Amino acid sequence: MRIDIITVIPELLESPLSHSILKRAQEKGILDLHIHPLREYGIGPNRQLDDYQYGGGAGLVMMVEPLAKCIEKLKSEVDYDEIIYLTPDGKTLNQSKANELSLKGNLMLICGHYKGIDERIRENYITLDISIGDFVLSGGELAACVLVDSLVRLIPGVLNDGTSALFDSFQDDLLAPPIYTRPYEYKGWKVPDVLLSGNDKLIDEWRYEKSLKRTKERRPDLLE
Image (cartoon, rainbow, N blue to C red; front, side, top):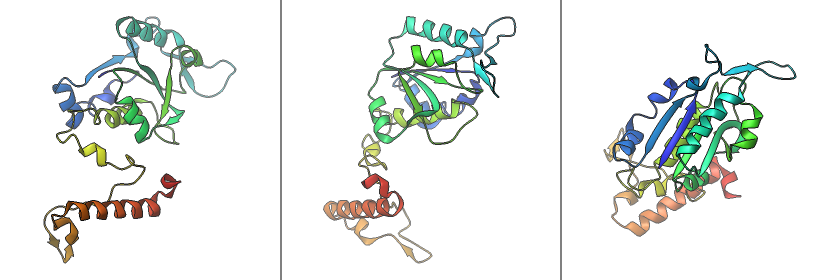
């Protein structure tokens, strides 16, 4: 998978995208990640990227020209399956959408900043708007990192155990069951005996019951 990210502040992406699972995905050649500093396409000697909004109002807006130039250049080199804008008014990211996007080949992500981007970019280039929740961030960079992590980990070969992601929360519209590791007993707190029984059928039934119980208690909306 190739992912191109357009950003005003590339430094915000460096650490989250260069460690752990995402680092290994790139080292294995599974993820081809490119960060594009939008400032390189800025206007005039000061590389201007933003301006006041027409009609008045607080907050600066990312200008259409720098973004359009960057997007057009990338589109001339790569055939994208989706051009995604990270924005609070987008469709909320969930596990189903992460699963869907993990099957794509080439994605472009655009990180908003300031008050947002000129609407003409959204009308003419964006194919998918995504939000990571009902709140506002200073920019789309952190949201982009969340999106990339959520979908890349699903690509075969990224995780050491390819089946691990299949049992994450939300994969079956259920929260994951409780999990335990050694020691068996600590301060009198014991691991449920069924998990040490070696009986896969009983263990699967226990995990399903616990997943269902936890979902009913914490996220009943998932069962509707």
